[in-house]
Length: 483
Image 1 (spheres, helix red, strand yellow):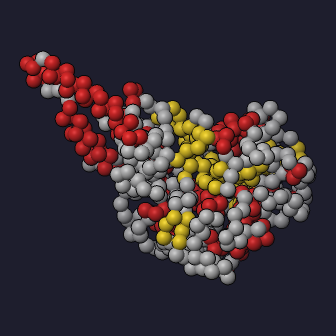
Image 2 (cartoon, one colour; image 1 turned 135 degrees about the vertical axis):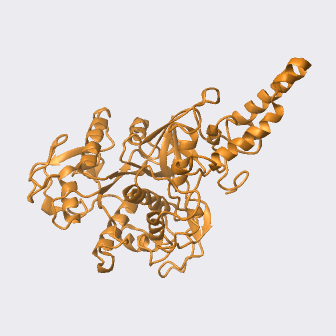
Image 3 (cartoon, helix red, strand yellow; image 1 turned 60 degrees about the vertical axis):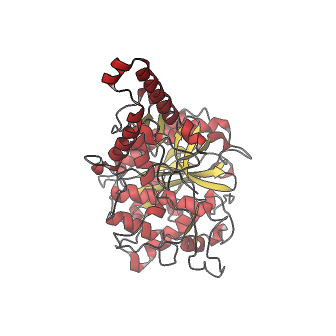
């Protein structure tokens, strides 16, 4: 993918404000902004604004001269207005082959709202609601794409995943965001220059393209063999979630990774349905199952652990049912949101935000050379793992087979998620994305946050026997169709 004027550089939409960086092209790269702590004196954004302002002053009328020269000043002012409108309105970028992906209005991005203003009423560029703040957030998300030139995958002799690995890459992006949120927090932003944060580097190392990297494409394909994952073959979101379930279980059982940075730091709950749900009903988040998974994660300790929830869904046949689109949009308002594995049929993407009726996503379909970053190399070049290109697509064109991710840091966060999910289910007019229930007949003791028996309940009751769990939140034989 080629950017204008260079990779990671974006056209400004309002030359009088740093929010001009929001002229993000759906086919071109946008700006890679500096982190919050570098917004002060001499920041790159201020330099860009200063340069652009200097250029535009060529067309500004001189106040003293305008009073002496009559019409000349008005002519200069007219040229200035034309140029500002040409740049700010995106006409210049469309002339250069780029189109604006973002419009004025609210963007919900992984649980955070950004209020993007029009050029006529743009707010201060350093405000949390502006374009620049959104682009800083967007470009800090980990971007994982097709790679070429890595070690052959198993016995396949394939050294690239071009044209078939987009679902694997999309899932890696979602899980990587969970790790970023866990280790660095939701407010973390990628530094403009090295050295990088040690946790940032360690997370990137986990997703390198080698068997020695815990969550590599090599290891994911190996873990997902029983669900149809194979080098050169495309799989759906449900099989991908199951592959992660197997890989993380294997990861935690390996003695060499226990209590090290290689160990997955949270419980994983792949949410499926009850007996009826297996035949097409909504998946069911069972509170007691989540509690048991956290209990097992902590090796019998009563404390609640962080938990990653993956919710595979099928929301239509050939096309997504329109009734689900408002519900999908609402999930991005959850503070626990990790986005969606989804995209157009046969072309998976990582959907991380929404604006109006369009999905904003990171695209794994760029082809890059394989880069394995050492876990202790704070000077490593991480540019191929971050992207400032905001792409978009209509929500009604999303493939109906998808998976939603959520990260809950602790018991309070999980309770908040359950309340929000229950409210969303009540708004669904009988067709929820998923429901929240509580088992009333656990055969093992459940624990609350204080270590006392019992759990608080949400929604209706259910009869799920915790002893029947296979350690991953599943009961009995897996009857799901691999989608």
